[in-house]
Image (cartoon, rainbow, N blue to C red; front, side, top):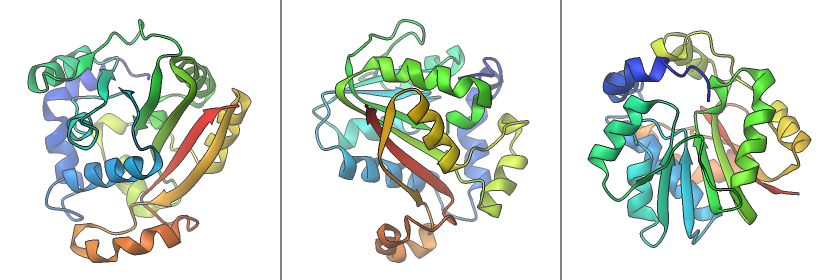
Length: 223
């Protein structure tokens, strides 16, 4: 995670900014957060220890508590202001220092919208670090913005905390993951339908090959 100060500046307004950017697609940004949690739930049933890596103010983390009630939920981020907000709101979350994460401990590490904030030349270093914190049977699930989707590109280009970021293609991210001995066991494009078209969401499992979704996901494990 780079840009150590940018999210400190926007931590208190982060949710409001993202809601405004996504208002055309859904009444509440939670629609997309819950969508991701449900997709994660389908991929990994009962992880004992979960870490929300790059958790921000906890917009996804809070849903992990609900959908994984028997799991230990941890959160980390290099934005100290964001972590303070999360820690105050969600007492059940175990907040841990970004630089003091246990190795070979987690069954699941989740990164949502984190990778595009890391300069390309440092992505392999960060994935290697994340590889080290999952156990031998652990999984890493990554959600990233799809650079092929022009609506996504427009949102990112006009977002104050995304200034200067470079979106990474799914194929390229898979290649980088492979270079640090992470195997992609599942991947696909997702978030095709906004809330007002949610009745069509059942079609998404048939569209995961189509590079038009708002985001894509990777499920990784150690080689």
